[in-house]
Image (tube, rainbow, N blue to C red; front, side, top):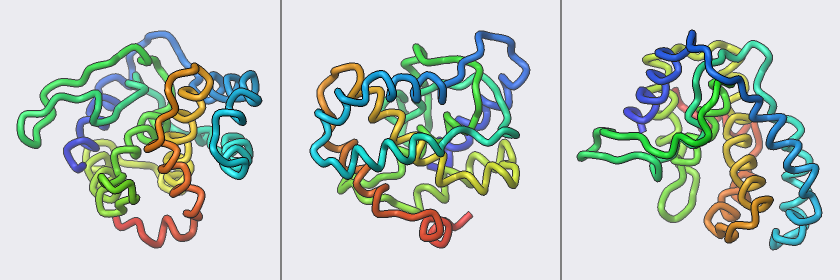
Length: 192
């Protein structure tokens, strides 16, 4: 996870001054949620999961002072090729755009679930430490890491449920885990 954090931070540092199309990922996903609310509600196994998504998607917009750069949009291990522990290739660049680094970091936090789908705070700490080694997180960004995690999981869930692709049961389980986690508890367990 440490190397993954460094790789993501390098992307953000190297592209902070690039001028490509701006993307407001938050507005795109929030609009998608509003347009597809009923469809999403029907596809979720529990009403309380829908209520959680509805309440929390409103609160995960990137902090106003979050830095912007070119973001991958889906920076997860499924979109990387490895040689041992070394990342040698990143694929699936179709969501690329200039937006808040906060969103990319949040999506990459999906990598911090173990195979048994428990959230691994050690992995998250390594991811954040690796990222912070290359691109120092601001105080505001640190204060909003929980919201970044929420963004990563909720945006992925909304996109999949809205687009009609097969429901990813592992992702739904991750949302359930997130529902049981509160911000204070999150920061107590996060060591960086």
